[in-house]
Amino acid sequence: MAKKVHAKQKRYFGSATHLKLVRFKSRKRATRAKTFASESAAKSWAEKQGIKSFELVNLRGEFSKEKKLKVVAK
Image 1: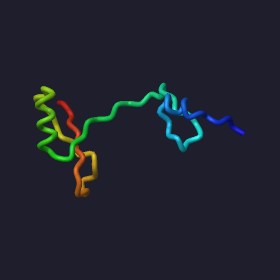
Image 2: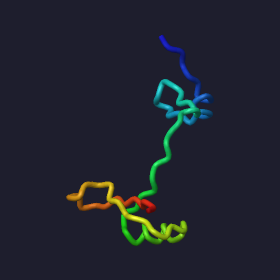
Image 3: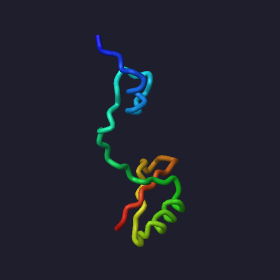
Image 4: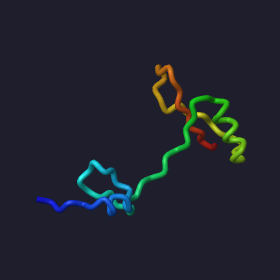
């Protein structure tokens, strides 16, 4: 039988209270790309960042009704 993890430890590590384990802070995650729902929002963000030449790539399928655009610098 596993030991009980106390609430103080769960609060410190930011773990969910319903889980029986502790989520450690040393977990490495890759940063995700900034995405936008509209072309105008993506273009204005690219201008603010100082990106002159860029391409908008739709991360959803070509038959999808919704867009998820990523700015890729050239």
